[in-house]
Length: 290
Image (cartoon, rainbow, N blue to C red; front, top):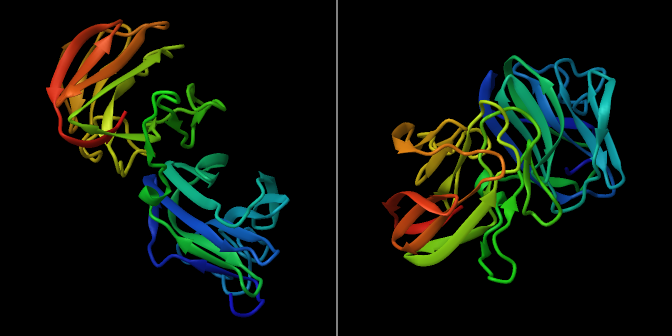
């Protein structure tokens, strides 16, 4: 911002709900003020002199927050609380189906149902404030595996981790893929194991590997054709199959609560393991995440 005037910058691109879309910006400068981010109508009226969610900005919904925190608002109505914002934070809007989720550093804090055509928006009002749009892949940690620390999950909206990044819990229905912060290379020698705490009805549990730069992970389950270099084992209690590129191949045992499942990487061979029994193997080469 070169002059202190409330306004909302909007994307040139229009997105449609239901759909799968993601928008993220990194905060470069706060200028001791607040920043807004969220969703606006595809034909916005009022963005030139209003922050997102303001009474005079019809069809807009978003968060307005500074260091201490802030609020989620739509057309002047307060809908909830927003976390504090600092320089370096990544603020996002994730759309999946008819659900819009506002995020802060990858974690969702407010969700609402939406339908129709929209644009993403960012509100700035103080001279010196600055943000930059970042691609989803730029947000991902890229750690080297350490024997002492082990593998750790990268948290995404609706798939939350504990403080150690070891336990993963699904907090909302949807098809998404969580993966490790650590990247590994094949050929190599690695072992990855998880304990299934709760299977959760008819929804399958899928475990496997994804590309080291897994675009689309917040919108698709492992094995989806839009997740490149990805192969997984999709299991319910009664049985399962190997999934790759949207195709199901072969048959493998089912998974129950309490089972240990995982993967072995031996040179260029990837082995799928259920209760320490190898149930399938394939050849791989390159850089991946579990």
